[in-house]
Amino acid sequence: MGPEMLDITLIRDHPQHVEHALAKRAVHVDITAFLALDEQYRKELTEAETLRAERKRISREVARMDPAAPPAVAKRAQATEIGARLAALEEQLANLTRERQAFLDQLPNLPDEDVPAGGKEQNQVVREHGTRPDFDFAPRSHVDLARHLELIDYERGVKLGGTGNWVYRGAGAMLEWALLSLFIDTHVRDGYELILPPHLLTYQAGYTAGQFPKFAEDVFAVEEGSDGPQRFLLPTSETALVNLHRDEVLPETVLPVRYVAYSPCYRREAGSYRASERGTLRGHQFNKVEMFQFAHPDASEAAHEELLDRAASLAASLGLHHRVTKLATEDTSASMAKTFDVEVWLPSIGAYVEVSSVSNARDYQARRGNIRYRPATGKPAYVHTLNASGLATSRLVPALLEQHQQADGTIALPEVLQRRLGRKFLTPPAGAR
Image (cartoon, rainbow, N blue to C red):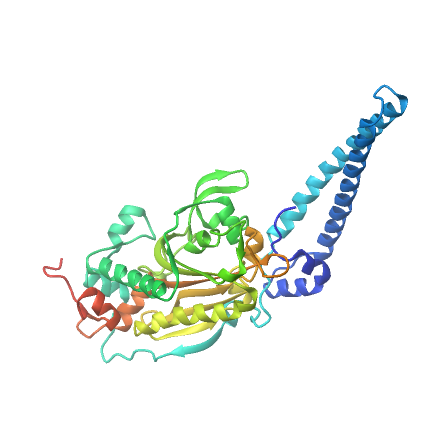
């Protein structure tokens, strides 16, 4: 039997609850048909186990008989008949197992009760930090500012990698590196272990994270197989981090296990780019620092709040006006039970853009990856997995440029970056082209 994406006991005992929860995501499945399939699977599994036990019992009896005696011959014939029945039954079981697993594989996580139903329009603003910047001059867009200050080379990025790529250069590259190192230093100081994961991951890594099989087309595959990408470029460090303890049983005393990772993130981002997504707002490769926790189920809510506070405090430390939004069910990733986004204000497009998604998968990923903990008493149980961007920079840099711009086109750096960059302003380089 394969992994259970959702608790199979929950599906059996509370099918209407599962159907209702999935319907909140606009996912409609026939639980009744699945339960009939599951019942047939369990019935034939029990029959197969009974036949195996019977064949083993007959083998023991034959071993005590004279091989040439008629009773032994009859028993061997009986064992042969049982073997044929068992072979046919095992073939049926294999088919039922595949059908059953295929149904479970495509089920998303059940959203928490307090997650609003619907699409983006139902997202709920939980709180705001600061006020929108009010300029007494005509503000520039982040693209114009980055060009003026020679921070980002968009044209050469396209020349190197095609649409959806860019090149950080000079002070822009230093700004990017300063942000990443600030985030890493902050999380490590607060007890998160730094991980630098491989950028090439296996199918099982994508499966555990919930990326596969349903969303395989979203990744950059470098090696394809019959069931999907056998190796692919990681779309986020979360996909790697959730697999660190795959097929392990952790001592309860080590929970929570906290990791922070840095990596580029590689996304196919299929579809055309909107005018509002110019510059670095949407691309095939961007940098991100990711926080991840393996938590005790009883501490899951507190862990989620901690991660949210950490992500939001980073935006606040950079002097950015931002808000926290609870995502509605259809805007929440399929693997997650609840997600909050930290969104920064971008004046040029008159909208908020997400720089951190802070999510709780409950035991959904842990079931896929067989990640458990061993309590002091009782049987091992599944951990809860949580992740949060801390932070992604491709939208953060545009917000920094736009919110902190000055009338002369320079950028006033927040204090935490002044110390790292050794300057108070971003200005055009000497001899600017």
